[in-house]
Amino acid sequence: MRQLFRFSVMLLAILLPALATAHDFVVDGIFYNINGNEATVTSKGLYYDMYFVGYSGSVVIPPTVTYNGTTYPVTSIDEIAFYCCDSLTSIDIPNSITKIDNFAFGNCPGLTSIVVESGNPRYDSRNNCNAIIETADNTLIAGCKNTIIPNSVISIGERAFEGCDGLTSIVIPNSVTSIGNKAFYSCDGLTCINIPNSVTSIGNGVFENCDELACFVVESGNPRYDSRNNCNAIIETADNTLIVGCKNTIIPNSVTSIGNFAFSYCYGLTSIIIPNSVTSIGKCAFESCMGLTSVDIANSVTSIGRYAFYNCESLTSINIPNSVTSIGDNAFYWCSGLTSIVIPNSVTSIGNEAFKNCWVLTDVYCYIADLSGVSCGNEQFDKDYNGDYSGRTLHVLQGTADAYRDDANWYPYFGQIVEDIFMGDVNGDREINIADVNAVVNMILGGSGNTSAADVNGDGEINIADVNAVIDIVLNGR
Image (tube, rainbow, N blue to C red; front, side, top):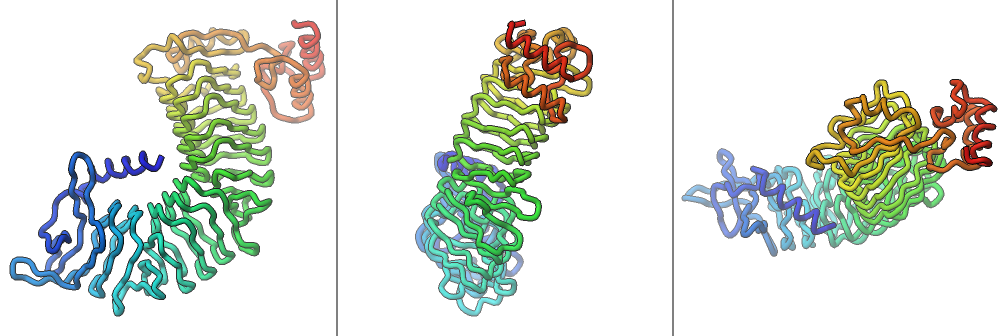
């Protein structure tokens, strides 16, 4: 997975103008652009046979540089100037540097030493911390695998430790109040994170793509977050939203929602049980969880967000409970191993391309009896099949096949539409047994369920007559 990530970064880098070979001059192996009367350190930006060649070894940036007889003060480091420099081991920054653009040192796994010269008016490396800190606001903006965060740092900036492969542990001091977006993105060596009770702001994707991350501990007394029940996750206490999980997370049954990007790129996650306290699964919640083979969604979830299970290539089947009313755009996009899926009658909205690029999806079990306002999404069973849908079957309730065959939102995407889902199969497991009797009783008592399958006698009501009808089917097979 790490190799795939790095290849993607390299491919992206090739396409970015910022990493093109454009530069004004080179002195002592460092590439510069001229900015008026000043010089900016820029990317080396060289490619050989599709391999990016960046800076390597120890780099010492001088305070001034002379080119064509003109001496320029070196005042800034360009955006992604040292990005993806695998072999860069140390960097010395002079006190002339007053501007360091975003992601200048991201994804440098071999970087062990960062030193800002004493007297720099904007940045420092206080306490030999091996990091770059914005002095005025005490924000750590770039770290490495040897960083020790000083207890005067208030915030960890966006992508500060991105791609620090060698970072195996980090102590976040209780001076830190905020952690920026993707601050520890792709730090594969991290195994456990302790969040002090001072942290009250955690950005999106902070620990995304951290393959080995197995535990989270939020210090007791944190006013905003907790890790209740030793769940190995970070939960927003006030609204019971799980915002960051890992491969060892056990979702507590007090959690009511799974937040956006909560498990995104958690490659080590193989199975998850979503308890019946959860009502919503957020955008990209399980995006690219490529090892995920089993998902147990409780009959309490009402919405599955956009890209929720995007690129979960190991999922082969999933049962959507009959509490779900909406499936977001691209929710199961690129679930390339998905062979079957059950869509309950409760669903009233299926987003665009919800099942696009599900290459081997052959069986869709659809309990929706009323098709008004419900389509299978824009081109979600699309031209990836080159127009050949002969191997794909839509299984529908008795008496509804003609409605699907007449609906242009459904029939073009299936080779055959067959009625093999029967009245009485209330829980949608394609069997009629005592569980369905209990499901009808639960509906009578006010619970949710598949009304089309539960109205066995067809009188438009769910009542004791339907319970008896299901019992009759169980006992007599009719």
